[in-house]
Length: 135
Image (tube, rainbow, N blue to C red; front, side, top):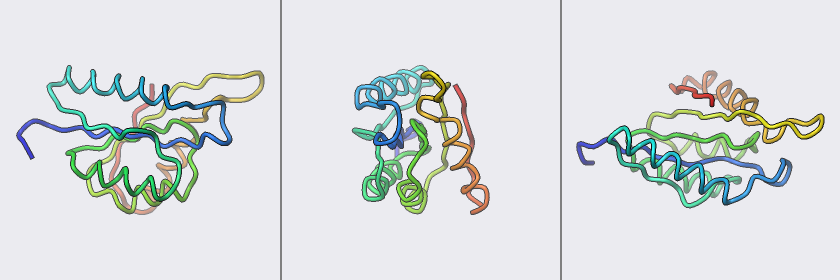
C-alpha cells in the first residue's frame, strides 16, 4: 500500500422490499464519497454496485480488503445473510454510514438508520470494532 490513505466504499441494499433504491442512486453516493476522499487527500476504491446477497457481499469485502478503511453505506434495511458474508470476509476497519430517511405516506423510505442499528448490534455482540456515521 502507498502512504496515501485509501478509503473503500460499498453499499448494502435490499431493493426487492424497499422504495426503489436504484443503481444510479449508488453511483451518486459513490461519486460523493470519491469527492470526500479527494478533499481529505485520500484515495477511494469503490465497488461497482451495491450488494444484496451473500456472494456479492463476500466479493465486496475482498475489494474493501485492498483499502485501509471500509465505508459501508447502509442504503436500505439489509438482508442478514449478505451482511454476515460481508462482515465475515472483511479484514479492515469499518464505518457504517446511514442516511436520513424519506417518508412515503406512512412508510419510511429505505430504512437506512434502522438497518445500520441492526448491523451495529451484530457487530458489537461479535466484538468487532466499528464506527457509525449518520447523515
